[in-house]
Length: 207
Image 1 (cartoon, rainbow, N blue to C red):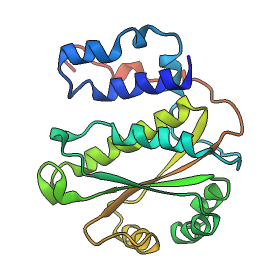
Image 2 (cartoon, helix red, strand yellow):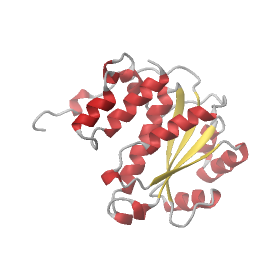
Image 3 (cartoon, rainbow, N blue to C red):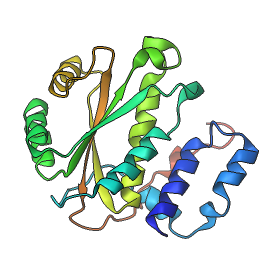
Image 4 (tube, rainbow, N blue to C red):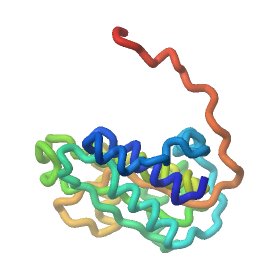
């Protein structure tokens, strides 16, 4: 499966809950039947050792388009993305986050900050904007996997100290809240498809 095809599959799956059945059929077509879709989903685990190799901007654009197209409650879409490839800024971020994250960021080619304008989300500041941000974050992890890249997720919200420090570093406006970070880069080795899924967590009809 080509990377573009895999991204289409992933975005289609994330959109199922919000799109009417005829639109789903039109969007998906034969994509779900193409070999490789499940492999891409299984590889998108979000925990990777990064190689330090550069990542082309068009690949980052594809990943971020996935984040913008992700599930959003009532289609309010409060999420925005901030991306940097500046080495100095990434190193400063590592100092803000701590030693473990700093080690990871040493080999990151780019950082994507998932932010929200909470007042724009369904229910406002105390509403569902964290769900929207989580969906956006996960969509980008899958999209990175489809591009044969790694994307490690670093949570920020609701740790107000981290939220404040990252907001200051990236000069975010007061109405924006950083939710998570994605460290994106090349993979040191090819992902292995997970085979340790606990199928006992699937329940039919009753628990």
